[in-house]
Image 1: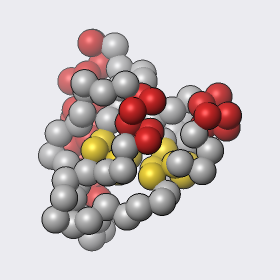
Image 2: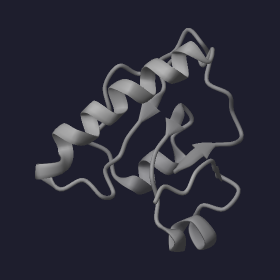
Image 3: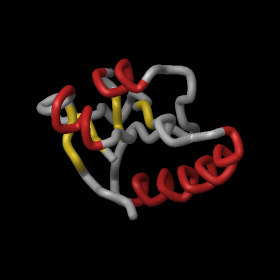
Image 4: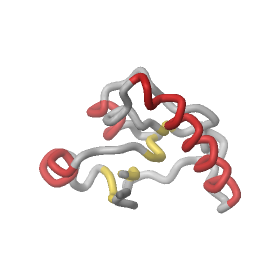
Amino acid sequence: MAKKTKQKTASSATALAAYTMYAPEGLKPHIRTFWAGMAVRLKDAGQGGVPARLTWNQSEEDLWRAPNLLLTQTCGYPMMKGITGAVRLVATPS
């Protein structure tokens, strides 16, 4: 998972969160359930602007560079070669 590094999300503006990279149609209901729990935990931890729903209609490249990105996914290659400095690695799920 990657998180934007250069700009903190303003609590009054809703951020973007997306899990589109590894999201075949059959997994989307499970991903939505995962996000519902994650959103609650982020809000409880004091993170402002947490979106209630995931964004599904933007390319990964656009998401990685969005100024209001909160959380998304990437695989290793873009993380190390294309978006280094634009986002920060926050977790490697297994």
